[in-house]
Length: 376
Image 1: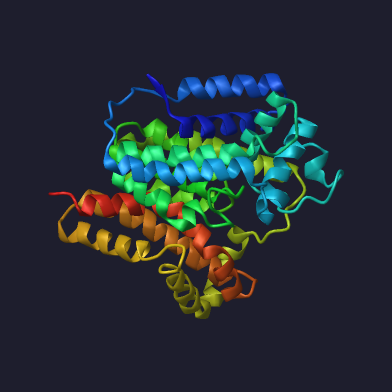
Image 2: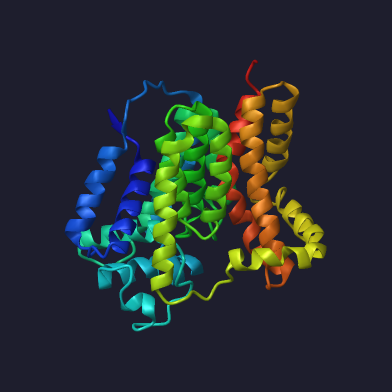
């Protein structure tokens, strides 16, 4: 048996969040118990793998990023001002509803952002007895490495090598593996859910991945809903066990948000009904997003991915095509709706966030690229 690190990271953060909503103090003991439980439920049968030339290409950027993270201070604004600050607030107050989240210690920006990854970081801080962010920073590196390993095991070593060489994922300063953003984590959890759908074996594990996604970022909730729609197609009548974890996670998220001070970010669910009055903004949103499908940090990856999805249909690989089209298309739709209803200057928001948001659906895109090149 072996531990799935990505599933363990998601499980630990989710367990701590549920505990916090139930008013269980987030202490070193709580963190240790959650970590041990996460390791236990993430155990899976080890697969025999052989190293290949592709693994050399896979390891090179991973080694570079690990070494760079060890010697380079965390410097991305959102990582320091939002995500890592939340981890410090949780570790200091030992609660996800303490003074930090009620503006009593400082004026925390993005107060209602989901907490799965900050809770993992807070667990490290509590277990080490330090609020220094240099150690929990490696959780973000671990997510990146575990994401690559998941793709290697499930899709193939060359697919994983492609993933880690994409600058948007590995080297982009705002959102990539070297930052403390949560976009790579959301992309990893969404990929885990997608691959569970492809295998069609374990609906409960699929549901757990979806729950992790919902608790990771604000964009995670609409993406979780897209994944559930695709999951209903993949699992059919067997989807019921896969609904338990997402329902619990989303309900807990709603309860927690009702208890803490409101955040200072736009509520896209509240703005979504205004889409009918903003239909004229959809072409601009589509054009702006299309510009980033071939941006310097993505290269021609998305152009190739869209061709690959089309090839799946031409080759009548209907199951793969439907799942890839639902998740990738759903991810694009989330972006387009958000960019259409936002009160921010549209193109400014697109240029500031599109490259990051595309990370969320990179896993299914890599899968489509790989499947479209295999013999039928």
